[in-house]
Length: 193
Image (cartoon, rainbow, N blue to C red; front, side, top):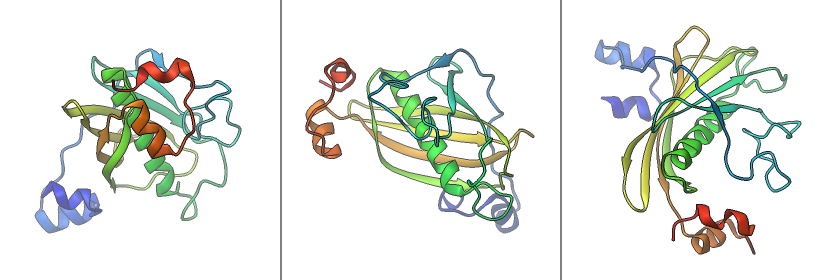
């Protein structure tokens, strides 16, 4: 049944079809702010997490427990709506993906790349909202990590969630995948040997 939620059936449809509610965690208590290597430097100008990106979301990421990562984002920009008055689902997907990427890195100390994932939207997110998120590791192996993430509205309700598998590449694999001629030397240690 949970698979149906993952393929896009929202909470209301799930409840109507099965007569039950999906179980979601509570919003996290955010701890110390954390960053990824190279973040907020000349090397990296990421859309979701870089404070120096003038058109980016400028979300912050925080430790929430030994293997978990939380995030915080306050929508202060106009032009991010899909339907009038609602934040576009692609913004939620970007936040979820970055939250899961941070969860992978802060769990194992290595960069991961999204291999596959499912995204579900359960409720609307009004424009101008404050968002918190929670990412948690579900499974680890040498090459893959499965992560689950949730985004919460200010009222504590989950509005979007994701379940994804990340591949942990070697430096050479990453360069080939990303079609990069080189990666800065100080980032080499964050790839699998």
